[in-house]
Length: 613
Ligand code: F6R
Image (tube, rainbow, N blue to C red; front, top):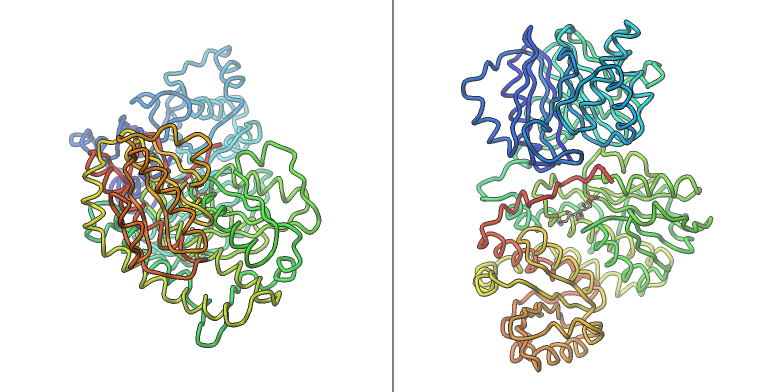
């Protein structure tokens, strides 16, 4: 949510910053802006996408070796040119970019207004930068100290970068609750700052992850990192393995489509080095230290939001069925505001693609404070969640840039399936033959996903029939009920069609009233243990003239006779069907959204990484 970029070095800062904003645009696209330091401190900003900003800059003076940029997801103040970042301080000597929310900004603003300060925007950010200016004026402290004093007083979350007209070649960055990465440039004295590594990877793979309550001071080509109390910290430089290719569209019109089609590869990467069907082994190195804790857990609490929460719901079926451990799946945003009961033998699994979701972070902190052991299932290496959990497993899906999560979901399912299976095996409660059968099937999943993708033309045709629908129902049972929720979420978020997911049998308790000849109903109906039940549910919809699109197992005949449209997925073990059944749902939502003229990579009001609560 909001993307931040900063650069200082010997190169022209503008192309680096604007290119970085384009890479970070998935974090917010309400407005964009840059500030360049070249003796003067020039700010250029514009409502809309980075491209709108670029177009507005054709005649601007864009030189300077130090600069910052921002792409916004609005919290305080509507998206317009004035509320766009960067923000000047009152006397225009300082500028700031900010990701997060300053909760006590109103009180600070009132004090500053009483002292004669004026504000142009409605943002909390403009208050913060003027607060820094005020501290600097009153205390004669350095810029760095003034930022530090200000941050000691603010309540809320922030990632900020500040620049001053009077401090050439200087950037001050700090974070609490919102991410910041510092890239160590290949040229002497060159540094990059960004909300994540994607704007940096083109220039360097050496990065430092700023921790909460740390301030980075880059001055005249030197970097110092301190705590908010001013103790100097020794930075740890990580070497990134991310490639530039992984963050580009690679010939696809949208990141979302690229990421859908990447799933045979991304799931292979999730399984790589972990599953070996020939030898009958399953290894999740990240968990080894705490394996006993998992094996003896009385209960697993799974935390996540959105699609990650859906992956958690699938895992509930798997952990209970195979590992025989009771599971509760919680929205992190709800869990954090109650007083959850966590017992000594409970373990928490936090699922997050970005590893930065504010509610999930806060829920983890709460569980930690109650003494729980926390396991993470994340995609972004080095993000906040993997750094604050006791142990975890990366899904290795590669950068996911489309705002609607696709390959992260199948990566999460792969890892959670492996976890459930490994616990079952280590506890000795799964027959060796079934264990090996599932391992073999798991290894085949990437090629079966590939097969599921091969019917994309048929799905596109089905999409054309339903592109003008105003409502959709998605129904599934067992471990495919959460897939129904995920299918409905995908459609809602990128095509703006209202959609709901339900357990198919629940339909009779209300949603069946919605069914008429205008209502498309998507059934997820693989040939599993509850196939016969879902066949009855399909009949109930057809009896009321609903339009049925059914996801069925290859070769299935029964449903084909009843449904208006069927989409086949390859047969697999019942435990693994969600890894295949979600693929046609992702494609269906993608094609419908495209046909409705929606920007699927940047759906309205959304942002990829929800770093504010
Ligand atoms: C939906 C989607 C969101 C995220 C949610 C959690 O397509 O992407 O619902 O799943 O915001 O994000 P992470 O997984 O990064 O914690």
